Length: 63
Image (cartoon, rainbow, N blue to C red):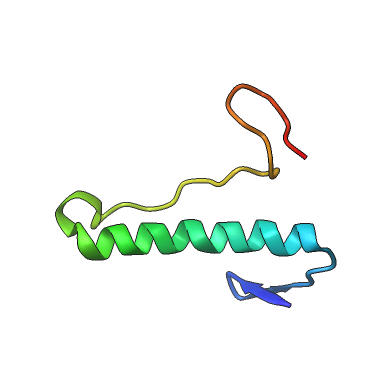
């Protein structure tokens, strides 16, 4: 189980673990930038992450 916004989400597959882990890492990057560069990133927030792993701007899928 992984808790996200006070909700428990069952992690049934390796894919789920990877996606949730990636979102956790994105938040850690945001937090680190705010800590070490407060003037530039102090009020920054994470707007979105990719809904599907592997989708890139050019539309290519990597498996």
